[in-house]
Image (cartoon, rainbow, N blue to C red; front, side, top):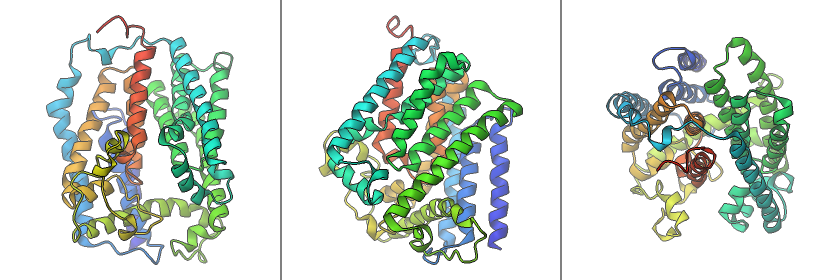
Length: 425
């Protein structure tokens, strides 16, 4: 029965992904992509591979389905009542300009790369090593967070921005090795700089952003897509598989992914254990959400403190931040719990009804902005949003300060590279 449910939801996810790509009124809409991702999130845990996973309750299933209904309702409500009117703003509106300078963008990429180089040096001076090359990567990552200020950490990983922006320029100009060899070199060096931080999320972030850029900017046919995406995916999968395997082998030994989540791999087909990161990554985040939902039914909620935490941290108002122990909710080593997790901490079960609709509104605005006014800013913001939607089944970027800094950097980039930025008010 579990296999049948998993199979049905996997097929449904494929159909929704096809609707996302299919030309029509709602092509590339956030509705199809979000529902496709969450069909996977509902399907994978049905395999029930771990002995420490708690069975889903009917209440939890109903709440998750209500969250998807809320997102769907929010999508249509905001699209009909708000997004189209805003996108019909006067043509002199600053955010619709599409007259950027390739030279200015290239210089901006160089500036980001230089800042990343300085950040890497400062990170190493303060931390004494990098996570992947340290003796215990998982422990070292937490120690480095204590030793290295947040902005230095962020600067050291700026490749997460200059790599996608380099691809934007390549896609916009049309690839030429003679014109773009410097950007390709920066992308290679940037990828190596991110690998040493042992973070799959950063690599996946770049992958999805670049794949979305190619889709939105080049509108490839099947032949073109089959030339580009497999090459990118082969490289990406190799990096995404190697980084966690090295990190976990150094920190916990080769049996970590099976032993800690309590999964019996004795019946797995040869090579099947390499699929465990996918299962654990999805199923255990749904477990964390289940535990959070039940925890906050009997414990006081935070009333917005978790959602506002990135901002209170940035302005130095930590005393107004949330006060909770993640270890009380689920496992100390796993409490990301999808994008809904922090909203459940703040508002309990009401989060399943309210948060998805509000987030759908923001995503509809970005989608319509790109459709109505395709420019440097709109295409990059919506490509970023595609990453956000896929990652909603894994963690919440709404409580990570780097998302807001990323958006600020993109706004600065748009202002810096736009030819008319200093002409019109």
